Length: 367
Image (cartoon, rainbow, N blue to C red; front, side, top):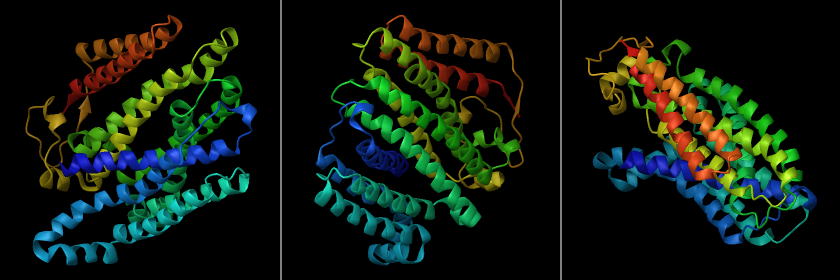
C-alpha cells in the first residue's frame, strides 16, 4: 500500500511542477505563437501546495519504520532534522509556501517579469528535489547538477505539453505553436537522454542492466525505457506530421493526439516514481537477499535466483516473433493517424508495443 501511495504521490509531484512551469512559459510566449490557454488560479495554488504535500509522502515510510521504536513525535523530529531527505522537505515546504503566496498575489499580472520570477521560484524548488535524490547523496555535486538539469528539462517539455493539451481553449495558432515547441521539445529530449543515461550510470553498470531486471528497480526502469518507444512515435505525429495536417486542414483538432502523448509521459512518470520506492542495484546480491526477486521476473523465470546470478539473452523464435509483432503494432499506431482511426486506437496499439517488447525481452532471458 505504501509503495503504491508513494508512487502515485511522486507522479503527482511531477505534474505539479509541470503545470506551473508550463503556465509561466506560456505567459512569456506572444499571443500569436500559441493557442489561447486559461488555467484557473485554484489549479496553480493546488499545484504549489501539492509540491509540499506530495514531496512529503515518501517520508512516511521512513517515519513508519521508526514509529514503533520511537513514537510519532520523535520519529517525525528525527526524520525532518537529521535525515537529508527531511531537511530537503523543510526547504521545499518553505519555498512552496512562498510560491503559493506569489501565485495568490500576482497571478493576475501579465508583465513578463512575474513569469520570470515564477520560473526562478520553480528552479529553486527543483534544487530542493535534487538535494534529496540518491544521485546527490552518492555522487555529490555531480549527481546534484545532473538531476537538476534532467528534472528541469522534463518539466519544461512536459509542462508545455500538459498546458496546451488540457487547458487550451482552441487550436488557433497551433501551427505557429508547433514551430517553436517542436524545437524546444527536441532540445529538452536530447538533454533528458544524456542526463538520464548519466543518472542511470550512477546506479548500475551498463553490463548489469539485464541483471537488474531481477529486482523491482530494474523492472520499473525497463518499463520506463519501453514507454519511450511509443513516446517517440507520438512526438513524430504531433511534431512533424501535425504541421502538414494543419496546413491541409486548418479545422483539424490536434489536442486529442497531444493528450495521448501526455498520457504516455504520465506512464513514464509512474515508472520513475516506482523506481524511487525501490533500492537501486549498487549491490545486487544484497538487494536480492533483503528484498527478494521481483514478482514480475518470477513470472518468466521459475528457476532459483541466487547472489551472483547473471542474466543473459538468447533470442528464440517466440522472442523474434514478439519483436516483429511489436513493429506491426508500432506501424499501426502511426498509421491510425493517417487513416483517421482516432487516438484511442493508436493508444491501444502503443500499449501493445510496450507489452510485446517486454515479453520478447523477458522470454529471451537465460541465467
